[in-house]
Amino acid sequence: MKKNIFYLIRLIIAACVGILSVAAFAGLFYNVKIFDLQLGALIQRVFVDFSIIALVLLAFILIMTLLFGRLYCSALCPLGILQEFFGIFKKKNSGMQKNLFFKYIIAAIAFGTLAGGTAYILRLAEPYTYFGSAFTFAALGIIAVTAIIVIVFIKDRFFCTNICPVGAVLGLISKFSVNRIYLQKDTCTSCGICGNICPSGCINTKEKTVDNEICIKCLKCLTVCPVNSAKYGMLHKEEIKFSPKRRQFVVIASTVAVFAVAVKAGAVIKNILSERFSDVILPPGALNESRFLNKCLNCNLCVKACPTNIIKKADGKYGAVSIDFSKGFCKFDCIECIRACPAGALQKFSLPEKQRIRIAMIAPPETEAPKAVEACPTEALLHNPEGGRPLFSATRCIGCAACKIKIPETNIEIFGVRNQRMI
Image (cartoon, rainbow, N blue to C red; front, side, top):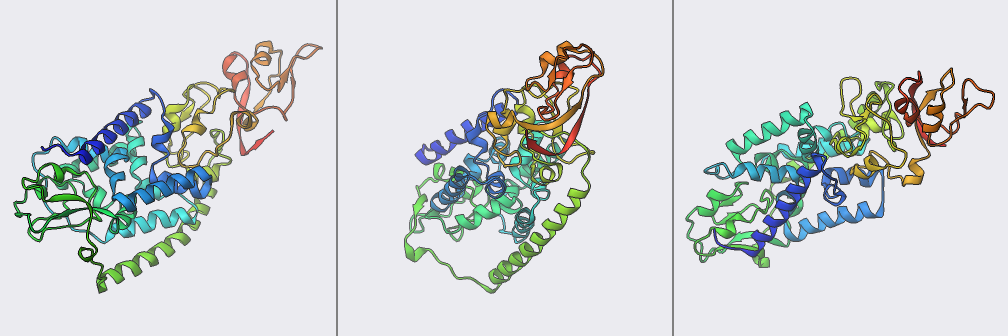
């Protein structure tokens, strides 16, 4: 391969993001900036836990795509980087891919139901969620990522070009990007080398055209062209043609119609899920069971971020992550789960605010329990000057379970609360 500065920069960024992503989900450390740039999670965060920072990050990704194309898919998406890694072991790419219609329908359903109030459908198709759940050994993630890797060996990056809802959104923007991959027609010999190495199958070497909508901007074509005809940059205005056909109007109208129906369906799904929740204990910032069930993407990053390992993955009882106090207690001076959540499912509270959030409630011990009193960080349990059962202040208890876990011989019961509130 020839050296190309654009390709080398893209490769270095992708390698760094890939290594940091694996390290974060392995529980080695958590780098907030990487996962705050995951588009599906970021879109939800803007709507459910709005902040100027989230809006700026979303605008950054969209503007970057408008300027440079779908670099997100090859440099910032962990699942995209994982596919590129496995693509190394493939001898030959599968050739040109069609730009299929149904990816817009998938995107319309996923983001329409999200706009309607639930992330339930989005988390069944979102690439970041797939990556996170697979690397935390959740069944859905393992199955999905395994299938996507198999697709890589059969049809290259078909998931990215024709299934992924995030890719569909970025592809539409990339279609009109300022900088594009193109073939210089006066020097191109139609040798087919760039087409053979293209993982998204977007290069038509016979007609000397590139479909920049499905091009993931891996920039590999720039490194193999023997006559340097594969270019990345701005096209002349006369070379940029936009002539919508009847089929394109049908696609647009159908996608808009599906999105509108999905918004209404999202509201229905939200209500159904809200009626089916179980009595569970949730991480601080979840606010309530129904909201969290409809907002959590099940990426499981909070599971790995929790220093006491009390956050467990979704199961048959509850469809999102929850707390299991049999393994430990919620540390009073910790907000790692809140920091880790990139989607706004856990509301962004500061440490002093988190220390006032009631996530559960205890039934105080019936007998004297001096160690339990000492373990309580909020003084909800106090020594009884008359001896016997400790004094208990329900208005101070945040349900951290420190009294129960630190003093296992004490028969203290703990139960969930319907709504998390600050005390």
